[in-house]
Length: 188
Image (cartoon, rainbow, N blue to C red; front, side):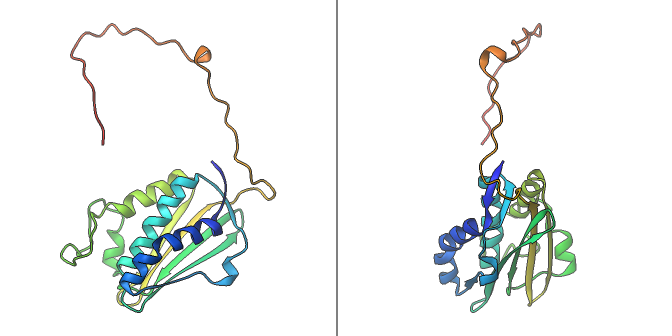
């Protein structure tokens, strides 16, 4: 966990996703009031994954000529990222199933790539980062995703250091008396 400048991270991701947005005919916007540095206390790589998934969905499920707008704001001791699109939106029923793994919300035959696990994983990552996530939308109007993360303490922008356990301090391995099959597991 470290202090992460979310404005800089969002700008980096918007540049990364610009080719996809152009291909889809979608405009990416970040209003000027979102430009001052806003720091969250989070894991940069995990929050990058979260934002990348939300932004790519906002582009994929948008319409030609649509927009994706990102607004950052401080909200008490938290930072809020609001990612809104003018895409196809979701019904109340679809919103209820949004976080169910492998649920494509009836868009399996839409030609839009996906497996239906992105938002379930995204919400879980946000929760592991001590944050929260909410989604609302309306069919043919768009979707708005709000992610809240803990705000970094003012003036504290360096990564926190966590003391590492040296091998000599690690607990000794305990021998097992269990006989039985042994093997390896490969998790991909």
